[in-house]
Length: 476
Image (cartoon, rainbow, N blue to C red; front, side, top):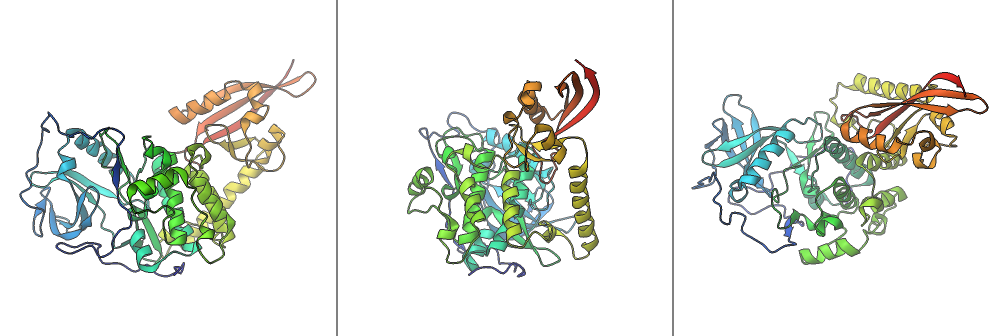
């Protein structure tokens, strides 16, 4: 049964409690796909720090000298999740105890601390905040997160069935924005799935999606005997041994989108091996062929592109995925409001109007300014451009699909693509002087400036800004 787009999200009881069976069984599982013979992670070398856990954490125990355990919330791939309360602040949190089999590997411990430091420094509406981490003498490594009240997307699907198209787009926009944010900071997730997406309620009774466990969900940290992941969401190249990448995260976004729209996974089987074989050879079916209700063709197209077997055929980055998703949202009548409105408080009407004005004013300025300006990806594909830039290149229509390598610009700017790559990598602007022949004896000296989009940019993070500025006319 499809979800109503404005239905308040109801909180759900924890998935698992101490001494009880899991209430909402999972249809997915994480496995290790081995490409080399197994070996003992600790063979021949005792880890420098071994935690002696005589028993698991119980109510009343104090972890890290300041977190009082109140009960268990559930279990995850890395260990148990406890509800705790800060002894001085009195504020509740969720605390994850890392499995001793993972925590006692010195290399994994070092990577855990590195990842935890990165994660705790990130702030985004759609990412579960990590507020603290460390090691307890009795319980070992732990991580402290904001306490979320609600349920996972997986549990919601299991409980209520597939989402309608508007709700699915709303959830995907929020998830995609979170993934765009971490990709812009050179962080990958590596295990995107409906179980790692959590729905909570805002004060305005809107659904807010939180991304869990990014960068920390992979139990293969520091291991070279295979790779971990969830077969139903695993990109084909990862099955072959390739590391996690932006392309593999985009593949998982496509699988999640299919799951939201249909209430089922595109690749299923009795065993993990059977699922992986389908991931390698069977195209993802179109969601419109699975459900018995009309669905805009754009949804099929987005999922088909995101789940292409060849990474080069997928969206080049998450902003491109979001661009197509926003077009679909417009066709569904969701264009009239800010897609991020669901995270706003009830008294934010003026802020929403200000945001709308700012967006429209920026667009008007960009389109009317006389200087040629454009945004492109590091490979030279133009994402958007103002009329002055299109006129400069002699291109008709809009910027959709325009490739700089197909224009005359590389002829007067031979180092263009090397500079684009350098700006994307080093995030330092580059300024060049070009000499443009306008016919006859007239030559124009012009400056072209390439700069990287701010990493916090909502849509253009990871892209390159180009501005062309005429300096003076010369005689040849």
